[in-house]
Amino acid sequence: MTNIAIIGSGPTGIYTLKGLMESNTPLSVTVYEANADPGKGTPYHPRANDRAMLANIASIELPPVCESLANWLRRKNPAELAMLGVPVETIGEREFYPRVVLGEYFEAQFNGLLAKAVSRGHVVHVKASHRVVDIQLRERDIDVAVESADGTTERNAFDHVVMATGHDWPEKTETKPGFFVSPWPAKNLDTIGDVSVGVLGTSLSGIDAVVSVATSHGSFLLDDSGTMQFHSGSGPDFHLTMMSRKGLLPEADFYCPIPYEPLAIFTEAAVDRLVETVPYRLLDEMFELFRAQLFASDPAYAESIGLGMLTVETVADAYFAERETYDPFTWAALNLGEAKANKATRNTVAWRYAILSMHETVLRAVPHFNDVDLKRFHKHFKTLFVDDYATVPHQSIERLLALHRAGRLSVLKLGPDYKLDHDTVERGAVIEIGDKRHAFTAFIDATGQHAVSAWDVPFPSLIEQGVVREARTVKASTALAANDDTATVATGGIDLDSQFRPKFEKPLSHNLYCVSIPFLLHKLPFVQGITSAEELGSLVAKAILEDAASTEFGLDVVRKVVA
Image 1 (tube, rainbow, N blue to C red):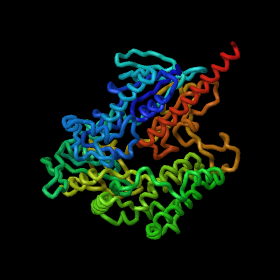
Image 2 (cartoon, rainbow, N blue to C red):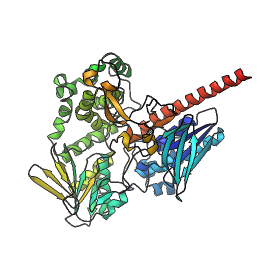
Image 3 (tube, helix red, strand yellow):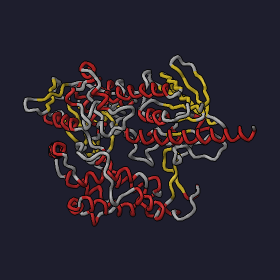
Image 4 (cartoon, rainbow, N blue to C red):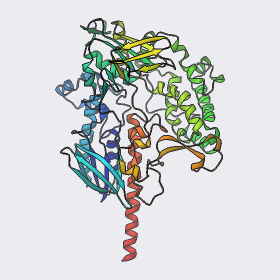
């Protein structure tokens, strides 16, 4: 049997396992999971999340493993649904659920895959409470060192190894009194008392932090009119301040057809042609394609933001311009009302849908940007795509509005030149904006998962062997020259091929696959969601099965020749 190791049993590991289970040839798969309960995934684990924290993916968007999320919920009896906190009347393909519900779903799907494995003749070993501490490539296989819960270390050899370790959260959250470098695990935030709380970040991670702290100080309840209100017995000193450079809140999830309807102009084929033909001006040519598509999809909106006169550097400012003239909570209320009405009438806002549809196709070009264009993309163009696809559940906006009405929540615009100081204060942190000083007794960095360097790989032998290096991008000044190391510059992450295997020249196994999110963000900035986990897992599983089939065929030929 081909022998495969999957490191991590979160969504990416699960979708990889799903792809492998399609093999007609029996496989031996070992799944290593550092936690005691495999299958849940860190972003959805009950030890990491408050039960009030919502996921921002609906059942219709979530790629089924053995069944859809909504169908899995429909099979639950009333008592089981009550345990999950899901009223039966809320179950639907376009509804959003707490993160911990997705954890329970993925655990059930993982167990379903294990049952499927047996029926198809595969052998799957699940090693819970086993942390992989090192990986070493050898000529014909890959050596994996694993530490179990009792502290013992064992080593095993595999034909293929998949790094599906997912999100990388710090082990210690409160690094000094009142200063939290992450909102997870959420239970750590329960120590925050009736004080002024700063939350850096206004995206869903920031909302997670706000909701977690708020629910430890009060409750969200619907009044007689069905409007959500926040009730708290905390003193007047309890106040939350969310902050970001623009001081804007995310918009509410908007109705649109799923799967995405095909675009006429900004197509995969069109972007691929640009990659082939104009690599030295790829970003600007792609922007022209973006502009043409947006004019075709929603000419009125394109005219309203002056799209014809905009550039890569100015389009995001125009995109946010009207929103920035409003109080963030006023805009949030107006946007929520629009989103709810559109959902009820199944109306799609054309320009929002066009940008949403384009964001995945954009990723085909990003790895090919030269160093200057990659910086331009991250600094200017990327932000509007992120804002458009990172909309949040309606209930999340309702909670923010309820907290604001109760006088417990405000939003602070930081601008580009703010200073964060947590070293010279006894507790929490201080934000300085010009000559204004904002002090917070508790402070939470909720800016989400950050990209990391190749040198942050937690497996020392890979670094010692020189088989991981930072991803490289062509220098703009040499874009027309040969693509060698003298014409490239390191940009971060791990340098990977099209099958997500580290690039190196040594005579060692090339069957290590890295689909760990933090190492991909430099070149794949939109890769953090569950749909990306499914795409990565499917791609790697296909690559492994193809390699296994070719190896098996080669051995058969050798046997026949010898015979």
